[in-house]
Length: 413
Image 1: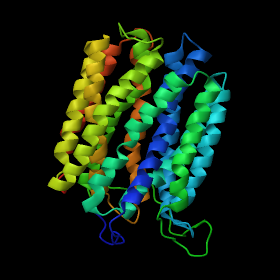
Image 2: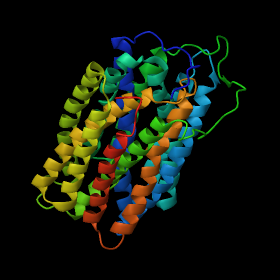
Image 3: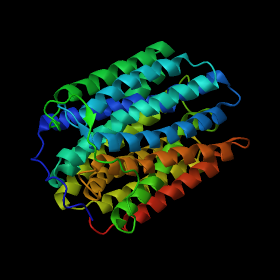
Image 4: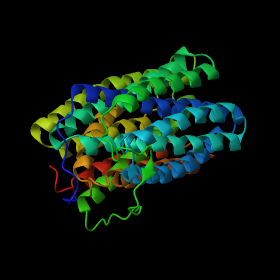
């Protein structure tokens, strides 16, 4: 059930708007995908090669806590922002500046506490960028366009991942060049959207202030909004799978996979991400357009969960290079279908369009809680025995359960 007192949905968005939003989201994903999958693991290994997995798990856990809190705050604050520049754009701009600054802190870290401080700053600033950016979809896109806009915006994870990993894992040889590259691309991707995107002024003559309407955090009643609750739980289960693979893929290649080509595990991971990206893009575009055309979301999200489960189970059972390529192809199919169509589905079950930022902040807990659980699972299963089989098998089961829970949603087909 959605709040019917919310403002009416605006006119259909243009192709230029979709292009700008897609570019902005690609830049956003490029800012954290290679950072968390390659640069931070490499930094953890440089700080302590023996205990790298434990360091990575611990800093990822605390960074995920910060991400959840920051996203809740960013959504609620941007909902209540009064500004001549709109509700969302001021926070996207401030988050952009802080995210770039956080790279310097992470790059300079030479011990555990420095790395942790850098990641906490990154998650705080990035979520003040990304939370308001995501809220633009329910703010401005009508239901009839949500699938196709989500399809193009859904290109952000694979494109951000492949360009980021190729740049940081293959093309750029030094640490300084890698951080400089993702900072530069982030600025040129987000900057035009901040400058030119349609975000109607919420106060004609005000630079930036908050409405006196009280902030409300995490107050959504799952009994009153069962479809939102089902979408939340499904996303949590799916994201746990994605978090496990993202955080531990590099170490999996280093420690378990036999027959991987290339001079380093980073190069092997780049190949796998390119494979996943090809399938991700194909299924993302097909799923977004077909879900609009057929007026159905759930079958695509369910299929995405099944593909994710199959790919992750192969990682658990067959740690050899050919099987790993097949696993990443299935993983890419699943990620593409799930991520794109789930974004459109969720935008249709938000409790309130007026408080879309707050509600998306609550929903984002389903993204960040898995980032806490995945490191805990890693500490438990990889700390001594390096039991990647159990780790990825649990991740596969989580995706399967996520696909089952989607079927509990009643208001969207």
